[in-house]
Length: 106
Image (cartoon, rainbow, N blue to C red; front, side, top):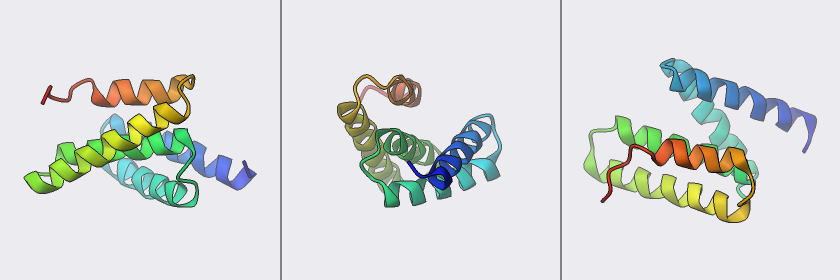
C-alpha cells in the first residue's frame, strides 16, 4: 500500500474513533476520507468495514425511515463482505461486532 494511502487510512481511523467518542466534525471527516478510500480501493476489507460501519452510524442518526433502511442494508452488506474477504482480520471482525451489537433483531 502506498505511503500516502497508509497515512490517509491512519488519519481516517483516528477521526473515526474521535467521532465515536462524540466529535461530530471528526466523524464527518472520517466518513469523507473512508468514502474516498473505498472509492479508490473497494476490495480492501478494512476500508470496506469502516465504510460499512459509517453507513450504519449514519442510519442511526437519520429520521427518514427509507434512508435509515437503505443505509442499514448498505452498511451490513459492506461489513459482511469485508468479513467474507478477510475472515481472519480481527480489526474487520471487531468493527462488525461493535457496530452491529445494538441493532434490533429484525
